[in-house]
Picture 1 (cartoon, one colour):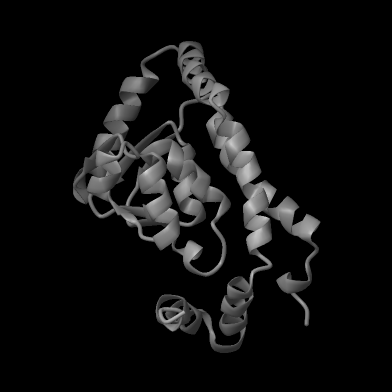
Picture 2: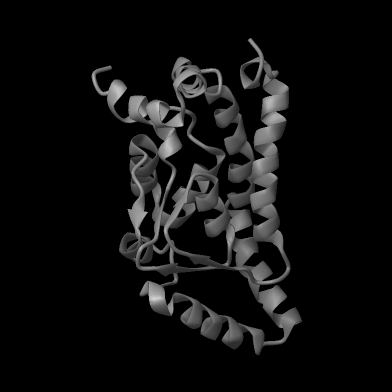
Length: 200
């Protein structure tokens, strides 16, 4: 058999680490970065959105990582704890359930939630307010807040989360999901993930 199943642990670890480093490039970017989220920001998209300095959501937005139900905890999910706290983060990664836009706002994942038809206008309004500030001052302000979280372990926790994802890639449930997806298609694999393991 060929494919991802035959990739070495270290190659898989490097791939996962690449995802984390991409997210951290947003976190470390000297410019403020605003995520405008509508629809579903699931899996890797959730981490990219949460790595941004501000998150402005449409009222139809949802954020989460359903892949935890069969594949892996997801290198992205470590960032949830920094936004919603330990208990809610554990609920998200143990169930794979996504948060609604209002829940994102209530838990501090989102700065604002707007009706979808006003989302772009409101986001641009906020961006223009930020753009009126000297860019060097913005960079210093962003880095000051980032430093607080880095001293508490943010970057280290994100980097080390990849180890758990790499291990999860060898779990039987992960391999079974991929096998079903290869043989019967993603739709059937998702159905197995949601229903087939309910009696386990």
